[in-house]
Image (cartoon, rainbow, N blue to C red):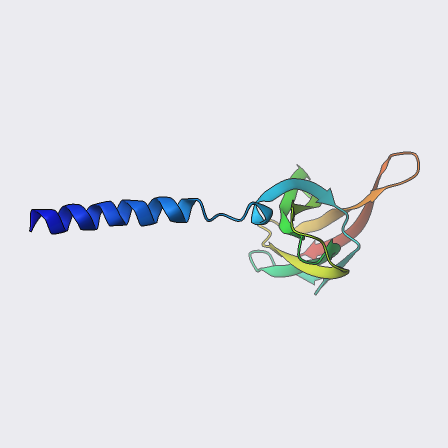
Length: 138
């Protein structure tokens, strides 16, 4: 009985170690970079306080090798939010470029006019360009 347990435990360890070596290096994230937000869709330009609204952003990604990583959502002041999107890149060969939608769920806690600034790249002088949207919260 002890020999069966020892053999099973040894076999389990070997299989576990083999699975650790089966990682495909191409699938691992190689880098994370800021990606420009090309357009923004706000469902309603006014809403009630403590309700939730989805804000969709659209950016271009290369198929197979890139994908949405996350947002940098900064409260610049009480009523201003700056939003930058980030993409990950893997070592997999890239395909064609496609538009991908991501979303932010906005749930304000106070009334007022909120200004959202979505990063849209840089101009020829190297200055940030922003897409601005305003949402009135009642």
